[in-house]
Structure formats: structure tokens, C-alpha cells
Image 1 (cartoon, rainbow, N blue to C red):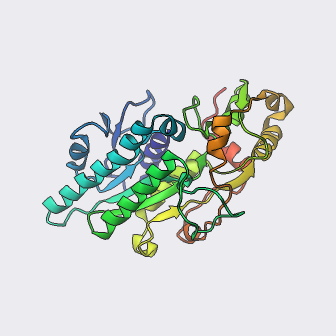
Image 2: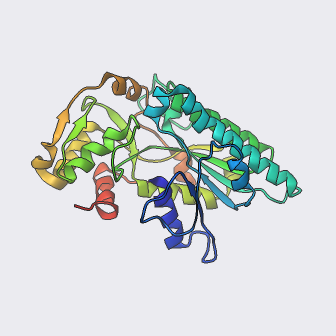
Image 3: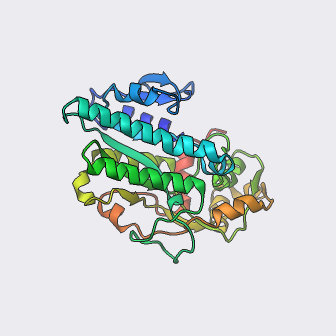
Length: 311
């Protein structure tokens, strides 16, 4: 989903100039895929990372991952996809850098996550808060951040890691992410379908729209990374709100009939994962560097209605 949002943004807004060529690599592509050269494959397969790196792209957006719920259920798969594929890609880029005599040093933008943080949390996390994840997914993202920082320090690439908020409202069907319900309780009622709420309405979380996430990624690809001062992982801005506040925003847009389609069905497994996620941030570094997000959950719903709502 995010890859397609990003690719459409790059192709329509000429972020990297009118002559920029877009290479899309994924397990599969939708019928309405963004334009560009498409390669179907799996980054975990032997030799694939080397073949991608051999094309020496100037900018690489590394979004490949399995989501939080699946990584928690399948321990080995989570580490293979979320860490070892990153290790293979970084080493392949390092080999290309060395083969070029140091001339090839690509910009790499990595989609990390606020799951790199673990409780107990202060009321609001600052840019100085410790990265100490309490889920496998969070640990895999945090380990990838450290690798990207070290490969950048050595000069093999020029990388940044963006700790994305939960993206909401996600279009399409629910996935295996533990956070999927945050989108479902908005998207499904807007589409006149029932939605299941597995946690209490008092749960507070950190959100941004898919549109905002795409702008984060393109901004990171063009910013002056010397301003990061060797701290290459950034907490992205977003909106902190409770589930109850999400529901009220839905009521404002679609009325009580839509809200009535939300069914409360507690799920202890999801509750355990979500309680170890941060709820609010003070993202001074990212804001000073020019990253921007929505200012309210009402605005996030409006973005979904403009970009993805099809009844």
C-alpha cells in the first residue's frame, strides 16, 4: 500500500525531475499500479538483493517487511524478512560502492516504526527517549536502524530511518498488523460494513495518513543528511488520539449509523501488543527538518475520503 502511494507521488509530482526513472520491486503489483519498470520477486531469495543493487539506483526506499502481528506469530519469518533481507540489501549496496571505487553512494530511506519503543512510557516521548522494543517486529526494526547507521558511518551509503506512526486510514482490506483495527473502525463503517474493535476505547495511539507517510519518504530522500549529525533515525510527526476520539471524528463525518457498525470484541493478544506501543510524541527534530503531518484525526479521515474512498 505505502509503496504504491509513494510511487504514484514520485511519478506525478516529478520529485526527482522529469527524467527520473522509477524501478518498482515487489511480490506482486495491483492492476492500477504506478508507472515504472516492475520486477516481481522476493528480497529474501538468494541473490535478489545483489541483482537489485547491481542496477545502482540513486535513491532506494526500503519498505519490504512483514507486519507486526505476523512477525510476532512467526518468529523465524519475522527475522528473515525484517532483518536478514535488510542485511543482504545493505551488503549488496556496500559491494557496489566498493566496486565503483567509492563513486556510488546511494541515498537509502528505510521505513522503520514507532514499535522500536517499549513501555513504560512517559506521557509524551521526546527525541531522546530510549529505543527498547518489546515486540519481535520492533526489535527487527531497531536492529535494522543500527545497521543503516553503521553502513552510513562507513560511507557505503547515505541512509535515514523514519519511525512511522501507524498509518490510518489504510485503504483496502485489513492485513495481519496488530494495528489494523485502527483503520478498520473508520474504513469499514464508511463503506457501510461492520468493524470489530478489539481494544478499549481509552487506548491512545500515534497516527498519520498514508499520504503524509509518502511525503515523509520523499522529503527524507532529498534532505541534507548532514543535518542529522549522525543520528539517522527520526521520529515522524503525527496525531495522538484515543480510540474514542477516532470514533467521535467518524461520527462527525458519517453520523451515528456508521458508528453503530463498530462491534466491541476484546482480543487479549492484540491488547498485549498494543499496550507496549507509545501513545504520543514530541517530534521537534523532524519538524525542524521540515517533516509535516496532519494536525487532527478529522483531517486524517478527510485525507482518506479524498484519496481512497470509493463507495
